[in-house]
Amino acid sequence: MTAETLGSLDDGARHALAERIRGLLMAAAANAWDDARISGLCGDGGWEIAYAAMRDADLSTALSPGNIGKKAE
Image (cartoon, rainbow, N blue to C red; front, side):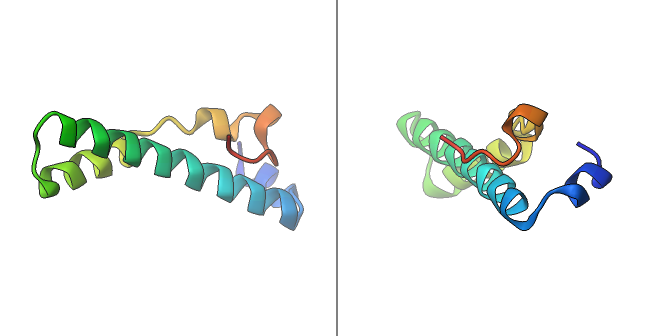
């Protein structure tokens, strides 16, 4: 997705895209946190793993043309 493509979206589609990305990041963080805690990491370690999961999350599905404007599942 380019800046031009993003700029051509209406407010509703931009909002839906932002919500989709937020949902993907929250899911990545929650899953990583759970895995870290199950593995025995302390709270700080869990947060580090959750942060890394958000940083490294693959957002390509949210940004693919067929998914623009769709809500996260």
